[in-house]
Amino acid sequence: MPDCSTFIRCYYCGARTALTAGRYYRGGLFYCINCYNRQFVNCTSCDAPMDLQDSWSNPSCDRICHDCFDETCITCDDCGGSVWNEDIVEINNHRYCCNCANYRLRSWDSKPFVCETPSYNKIGSTRKFGVELETSSCPQHLELRDNTIWACKPDCSIEGLEFVSPVLFGDQGLNEIKVFCADARRRHWHVNRYCGYHVHFDMTNENWKSLRSIAFAYYTTYDLWRHFVSDARANNSMCGVPGYGLSNIKQINGEEDWDYFVGGRDRFEFVNWRAYFVHGTMEVRLHDASLATRDILNWIKVHARFIDFVKDLSLDDLTEYFTGNLEKQFDAFSEIVGSKLTDFYAHRAEIYRKPVRLVTYA
Image (cartoon, rainbow, N blue to C red; front, side):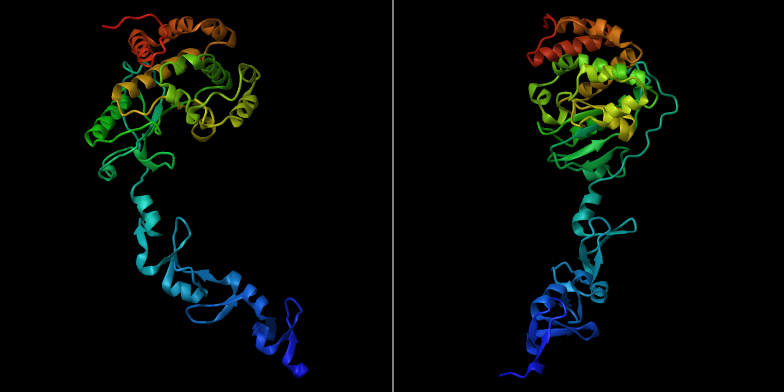
């Protein structure tokens, strides 16, 4: 029979353990082998024992002590993962792993749009705006990095990248989009059904009453706007049906009510009112993806003019203005946006086999 002196109780679990079946740790504390392996680990580099929670993981997933980690590895400033010293990539005084460096290199922020003497004849509105153009492929996009004021952002919902304009205004802002889209087409960029085209409109100068009127007008004319886009886009969950009713809008009677209304919105509704909290804008998400200049610019013009018109109308006035069938709504729409945009969107509705008026085109 073995001598009792060859057994000792584990400090952690209290089990009676043979000296040969356990290990001592700091302070002369004895642990059975199971408790020791759960609590501690030996550095795979220098073999020093350490608390498991104090260990570091190198890129090979080995557990090492802090000193050995500092000698051989570094932490990525973006994802926090460990990187071998020789594999680190430095960009603008930050240190990244290869994956995060690739992400940073293929994306960048926008630069300010500057125009000292803007004109507003073509757009028909002084309201500021910005666009987001999603792509399915965008070859040679890195050539734009230092040659554009547009931002480039990855987006997990698309196969390509998203290009975001700075805040734009006036006819010169429309021209900035025209130039960018022409360059995109020259580089043979493409879009597909998974992409979208979103436009933001500045709402920072509106009060709760005008915001309520705008929200009311868009809800009332929701079906009309759907006639101007494809069924695939109109039924896309990324620009879905409003998750509220006219009664919710009519209950807005002050700033707090407006904030409550916006706070309950889903950003993937056809008008994203959540953007008001983030950017001070409303975002129209309904349009099909496009790099076609005319489609993009007309969508900006028609919404800017529509917003400017409805913002000062009462709910009663809006109800009277837009009550009726689709053709009556389109007649009201026509009075607001002008004949050229009226003809454009009447034709567009026909293309999608959703006519809003009887028009014959040669």
